[in-house]
Length: 167
Image 1 (tube, rainbow, N blue to C red):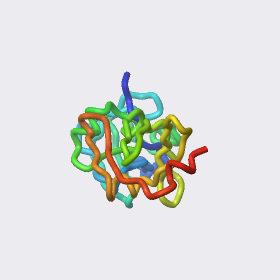
Image 2: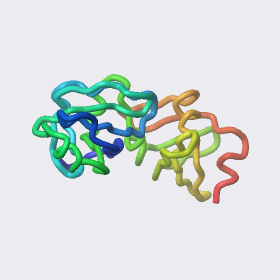
Image 3: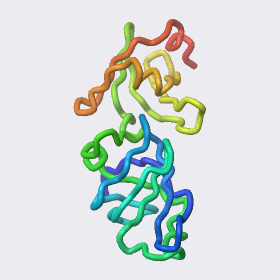
Image 4: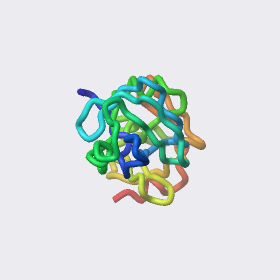
């Protein structure tokens, strides 16, 4: 699958039927994946049979062709990816990987999102600009910024000193 966005990874098998838990890196809360959702898991093209939200960042999913605990175990640790268009078609499902390459504009400058850290207490976007790079809390972007998913950009007001303290 070309042009995929990484959205998380398989943490563990769940039950005897082959279901797995997916830890997702999202700009918001987890939402269920619709039946038929086409994804790539651990490098394998797989289609969702059913899913359910387990927590704010975890979805349990059953994939076609994964029908046993042993088959699910083979997916453990595998990246969960899909095409950008597939994620955009599901209301509310916005992986942090969708921010990569987006233009970020703020009151006195602009830059490009080049990375993200989903594991901090407040996930961070890594932004490069002419003065270096700095991290922007995802909550600042989603809570106070304007995101143009179709146009690939966002606008927000940065707190004083955030960009000037770049390394």
